[in-house]
Image (cartoon, rainbow, N blue to C red):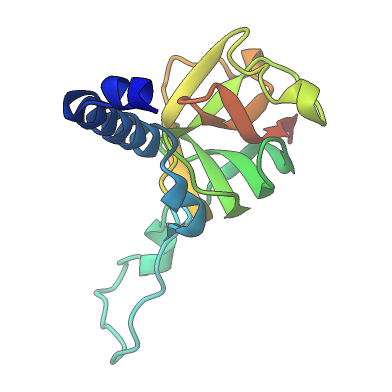
Amino acid sequence: MSRLRKILTPKVVVSGLVLGAVLAGFGLYWFQPWKLFQDETVNEALPGAVSPPAASAPATRAPGESSPSASAPAAPRTLARGEFISHEHRTSGSVQVLELADGSRVLRLTGLETSNGPDLHVWISDAPVKEGVGGWRVFDDGEHVGLGKLKGNKGSQNYAIPAGVNLDEFGSVAIWCDRFDVSFGAAELVRA
């Protein structure tokens, strides 16, 4: 007992408490366990969609003037689509690659439901989508393009695809946790 008392001096006890507090703080920062209980819902409008005109008195037009609907932008064209499967966390929803009237492209997640987590990103990748544990870590093995941080773990969201990206080289989408190098869920892109 006296030997233990010699080892557990106030200096050693305080040092142990400080070290424990630092490790606990680091663990909380790294794992962010509270995010598992917090949902972030983001519902963005379909890009290029036109809002219906507000109900008001009919507008008068000069002879030969086109109606507002005649100048409305064309609806986005679907280039590819897919359905999410679950990997590390239960994930569902659909994905579309859309070409807008101006020629730009966006990746649209619709009805997304996944877990929240630290450092989540949306990637397009050349990796095949595999069911089960074997598919969790493949998306950073080959080519991938990050489209940005996941805006919310639920809802419908849009992510711009850079102009120089050749979509023929990328056949999948992943919700990627960069902190732990693991896919929460993924979808195979099938050309429309």
